[in-house]
Image 1 (cartoon, helix red, strand yellow):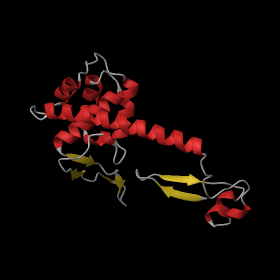
Image 2 (cartoon, rainbow, N blue to C red; image 1 turned 90 degrees about the horizontal axis):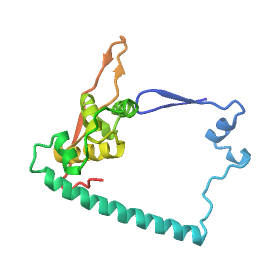
Image 3 (cartoon, rainbow, N blue to C red; image 1 turned 60 degrees about the vertical axis):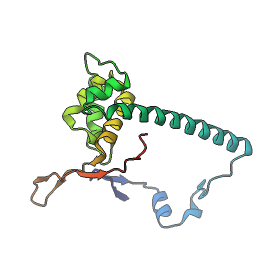
Length: 183
């Protein structure tokens, strides 16, 4: 058995009763049938295709970043509200929130370092409504808000003291340089 602690403070247990995990952890890998330590070399065709895809992705990311910079420039003359960010991005507000998506985003709010920690939990519903219940559009709103505010917020997980009381650590704020990329 191996126990790993995840960033939320929970423990993950990995167990394999036939001793495969034990052999792996103790370095007895040669006894593991089918185990290969390294990656197999790529064929020229696969490498070429991979490089081509990566170049296209980089071009798309660059064009999206240029578009977001233009949107950010418009945002700097406002008070930076969620409604104004959504308006600048050209999103139409939904009438009713998608409860499943909302719950997923609320769950993400508690994950240390997740983008959704940059808005208050009470504002997640407003962001989602302003983004027409589209999680990708909602993320763009939050990214612009982070850039506008000039800082990223990290909310450490709740811990329990030895007496059983709950302790909620203060959020950590990381200030950005003005030329931080948006995407």
